[in-house]
Each structure stands twice: as C-alpha cells, then as structure tokens.
Length: 477
Image (cartoon, rainbow, N blue to C red):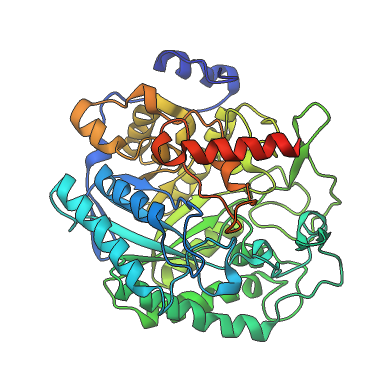
C-alpha cells in the first residue's frame, strides 16, 4: 500500500502544488516528447532517455552477463532514443562490486556483441538506429571501490560510514591514505584507454561520471585535500578537466562527450529511532562538499556547478545528465521513494518535494544554457503521470531530455506504449518501493553480489532472486 502516492488523477496530483509549495506542471499533449534534439554532432530522435541502470550482473572478469545482455536488448527495443549505458569501471580496482562491468581488451568482444544486440533490437522495434545515442558511463568508484576504498579526501561524516576492511568491518580513519596526485595523473590514461575501446565497440557517447560521491564527484568537493587536486575550485576541477581534455583528443569528433554530474551533494542521513531519515551530526563550516554553501548543507548552491558546466562546454562536453546526493547516504535526494530498502530510512520529506527540487534545479541550469542538451532526473516517482509532467517540462523548456531510471526496469517498453496507446500500463509502473535497491545491497552471493532488477514486474528474471534475498534478510534479522 502506498504511503504518499495515493493520487487517482492528474488533478489530484496537481493540487499538491499549493499544499507542498511545489511546481509540477502537466500537459496532455505529449508531442514535445517526440521531437528531435541536436546533441553535439548528432540528432536524437526523441526526448526520452534511460538513465545508467546497473544490474550488478556482469561476469567476474567484467564482461556483460546474460542478464546484462537481456537488459540492453529490452532497452533497445523500448523506444527511448537516449540509452545511457551503466557504470563501467576504468580499472579492476575501480569497481564498486565484483560484478560491475569492466571494459578492457579481454572483455571487448562481449561488449561489442552487447552493443550490436541492443542496436538490432532497437532497429527491429523502431525502424532505425541512426537517431539513437547509446553511451557508456566510465567510472571510478573511489571510496566505494571493492574490496578497498580509494578516497580522494577525508570526510568527517562519510569516513566513519566507509568500510576500510570488509573482513573485519573496520572503518576509514584519519590515517587512511588518500589517492596520490601521481596516481591521479596516471589514472587519466585509464580513462583514455577505456574511452577508445568504447568507441571501437560502437558506443556513440562517452560519459565521464562525476556523481553520487564516487571519485570524481568527491574531488569536486575536496576543499580539504592538499596538493594539485584539492582546495581551490581550479584544483578541485583539475582531474576531471584533464580527463575531458585527454578523452576528447583521443576519440573521433563524431563521438559525443558527456557527463552525469552531481550539482548538489547534501550531507548524509541515518535512520532514527522511529525509522525516519535524520541528518548526521555535522560541524560547520563543512570541510568539503559540492553545490552547497559551507555553512548550509541543506541549500542548493549552483555557483560552482554552473561555472564548471560552462567550462566543460569549452572542453567539448555537449550532453549533461543532472543528479544529486549519495545513494549510500541520502538516497531521498537522488531518487525520491515511497518506501526505503531494508537498510534505509523513511523519507524525511514528501517525495514530491524531492521531485520538485530536481525539476527546479535542472530548470535553472537549462535557462542558463538554453542550447545545452540537459537530461533531467526524478521522474520515476510520478508513476503513471510521468508522461504528462515530462511533456510539460519539455514544452516549457525546463529540460531537454527526460531521463527515466527505476521506471525502465519495470517497464522498459514505456516509450513504445506511449507511441502505440498514448499512456502507460498502470499495472506495470514502478511504485518506487525499492525492491531493486534492496537486491543491490545483498552481497551474500557466491559471486559477491546479487543481480538486481524489478521483482514485482519482471518475475521471470528476478522472482527467485528476490525470494533468496528475502530469506537472507530474515536470517539476518
């Protein structure tokens, strides 16, 4: 049963604008969502995008697994013209879990087959892939690397939450070493190597990931890091700048350079005695963080993110996917939810407030850069009313492309449904009950990680997996 989302009509949902002080807009005309868009040297066939959705289902060598192939075939057939491929580690040490995909010479042929299968599925269902943009997200997991964290700076709030030794459960302490400046310089070559391979296996765009408190995002906020890559704004953006410059120089001009970037970090929350999300104790001014004032971590401050976006455009970035928060520490910022996973907290705000935060923030960026291809986030929570709100946002030029994440796992063919029926199948829309996250948090698998998806609406692939994870949770409790 829904806790917050009890709306039976768009009118009921729209009435929340006044009650919550938010700005949700609606349009029954979905035409804006099916208009083309110029993205750098390419043209996108519609305004629908699939966010990078990790299935944690790769093989131990980093090649895509059976469920990875299945997911991208379903994404390809679904009708969205922007498919933002999931996080792909640039080195083995950069993986977030043992089943995260990793592109190298050994896994190259499997990636090429996955891309070819995705394109074929798209052509079979939609006629052509000439207006499809299929990309790959290059990542370094930083403090969330498996099995050992690789941290860019010491964070007095996140360090006590970061596991340094999985065998003993020991946490990161003040003497835990930082990745060195020299190691960062060498890491640029790993990004270039992965980017060139991505081009060879026929991806259309390269995303240099700067979000969710992984390595590059942590560097952006590393005000307390010494050396070349911390402290001043120029130093904190230095590593990403070097990566963009090197990748742009290494790949052909027709390859789109992109980034998924946090524009607001926020501070961690934890589960209180009554299960509500409560901010961690924090001293002010904050010693690090991105997109927020040092003295007020609850306010979005776009001063530096806007400056950085302007500079990235000069480096050749033509596609930006906007997000915020940390999925391990304050998931309600990044993906507003109805119910949390077992290890999470109840939302400390109405989820529509979080949706509105996304929409207002991306609108500010879009108005600042009206010709930038900008992907918005936060749409899955809107369930069957997602298309009407998305159409209004594109119509009003609040955003260029509507990104859908969790909703694609339950209903990967949602764009085809809109084309064929003019509405979504209400019985298959994501309810944001966090089944997918709950499975992702389960590590007691022989390979060190359970594959994740949508158990309620994709029982064929994930029904038995969900039963196993439930049994593990029962034993744990």
